[in-house]
Length: 180
Image (cartoon, rainbow, N blue to C red; front, side):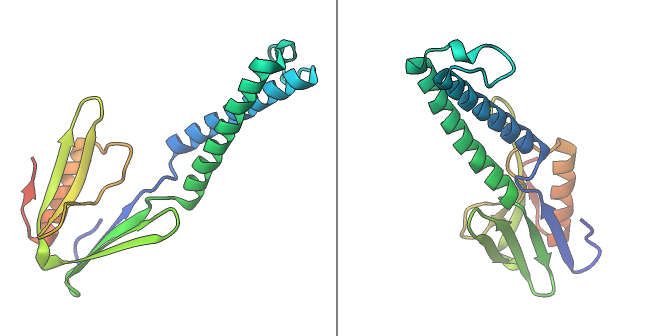
């Protein structure tokens, strides 16, 4: 995030994070476990090394376990697809020579690119909201538009990192820093 020259480029982390991979792994393991439990109750043989799922009645317990397993496997497939595509990854590029800011992100089916003239950027906004659903993000206050978020979605950034990044960007763009 060097701002020595006329261009400032900030990479943005997408959904390919360890926490997402752990959740997708847990959902995958649970879904396969439910499917094997359902199949065990249908076949009358234990297909899992723990418990005795063959002792379950297929109707209704085995059938319900199978439905849970199918739902979990479908959810896990979606999660792994989002991780493989790396939805949300991209960059924020601020170019003084061309006078343009380009915000680009990888979407689920297409790439999203937004260009903003630098003279329309009024301020860099720091949003900090703590509580049950915390939010810590940087956004651009743009003339005639809604605020344009710049930071990743999901894990809140540490407050010091958020303030430092906002101050560097505001100094680079020559606009005020709001929200502190």
